[in-house]
Length: 321
Image 1: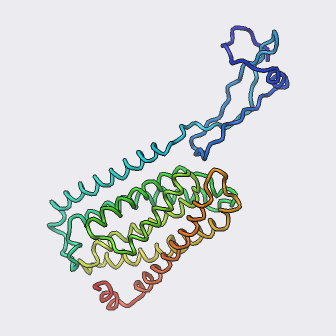
Image 2 (image 1 turned 60 degrees about the horizontal axis):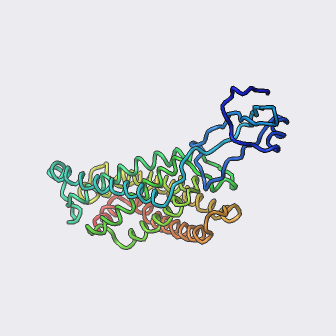
Image 3 (image 1 turned 180 degrees about the horizontal axis):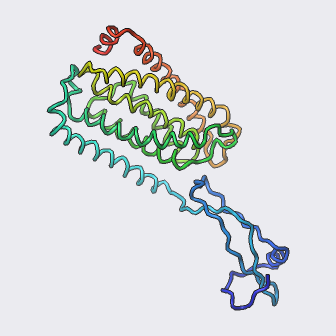
């Protein structure tokens, strides 16, 4: 298309560019990044002014997807991560104050002394808040990406990314504060450390949206677990048994079923499609941790399902141990 000098000034171009323009199109190649989220992309439609001797040509490019984002630095991530951790710390202790003034007056007394602490009760409320947010985001991502082909294993997903950063931030906060207040045993410490390692490897490289979605969707079962842990030594109300049984069902679906599938999916495809910008040792470490975490889920799942299937009298005896 011929244009006149009334067009806005353009950057200098080469004769090769002019020749390309005469043929009808210019190729615009987006600068490759580590993994720009699909939702942060925009189509570049603006034509480009090209000078060819005395002629001024207006080249209409092919539609090209360009990432519309600012590259995140390590400092940016650490600041973002520390803000969410700080939020959970403030929320935990604010909830502790509210629980101490209100709920502890009416909550049945637990047979376990440490469970009568306002801090312990508040942790269950904050954990439930986290579980609801993470499980909603993660299950949305799983639904959108279900059946994803293997060559797309490293593709990002915005819902999974949000669920992952909330989950890891809470795990770090829970590990630190729970240890300070004496709520963590060795098995839970190992459990938290494994998930923190997985989360940081994934988030720092901005990859593996599908794997992230599957891992964080396991929080669905914890939505039932928090109430059960809060009330199991306080009451024999029917809601306690219901929450335990619902937890067992959800555990078998998400933590044993979907999680095992997700681990197998990762082990099958992570090497053939490994991106060059990610250190191989990180992904090999992640593979080992995933296998260990899945094994731990099956170990726990066996005990959880066995307890759920026991007669009521045996359950009561086991719960009081």
